[in-house]
Length: 314
Image 1 (cartoon, rainbow, N blue to C red):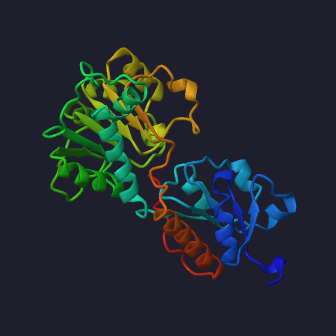
Image 2 (cartoon, rainbow, N blue to C red):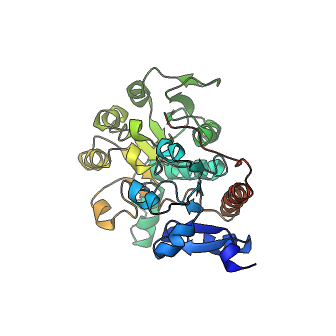
């Protein structure tokens, strides 16, 4: 095929460049957004995007032929969907494909933090295990209360897993859902009820830092917060201060206010388990995300309705 006739797809961020080879194999002409010339930008009709990364109006306006933003994962909080659709730009995502893997990550963070697994590992490696000394005793999970903020695909998958550990489940979200688990009247009520509070809500402008100091302190010095949603949903400064002061017991985080998060920010923060936004990064899920992205691109270039348009933001 003549290179000039190939549908041109822009990769929006270096973290996604590994996607370029797969899309090129699908017959797309792929360009790096951070290196693209003005002439290439003028030809771009579609973009593959990491949905949590903010797309400015200035950047989008530099792509005059853009008609599709295909978010590779489930999230699209970095995209102003209403702004795009008002200008004829469709937005798609890959919702649901990574829910089980992210739920597994959430449970792993919970277990590692609640049972002091990482400190036990460090104790042994440092030669600290003696007959008269072991890692400090942790608390049993059985019978504890597991609160879920945002009962979408990830939150529900994590709640089902938590039930298998003998945890009691409750949740809160802006809209009721037909589930057997109790929906609390407010986020603050859920936080006060919970021993472990899982944050799994979709990020948007309305819930920026909704896990506030008041919510964190409601979980309390014996409790734990696990975040697999977005760093923007949690007041990270308040979380760090509460962990340092003992007003919050533990935290398990896969997402951060700034990514990559600076190592120095966490150097003096106790009782934390941190992973580098890797909840959906599995050998099984990555090909599914790529396939869904490619499917939406193919449909768009064929002039057909895309498979998974995102819902309009509230």
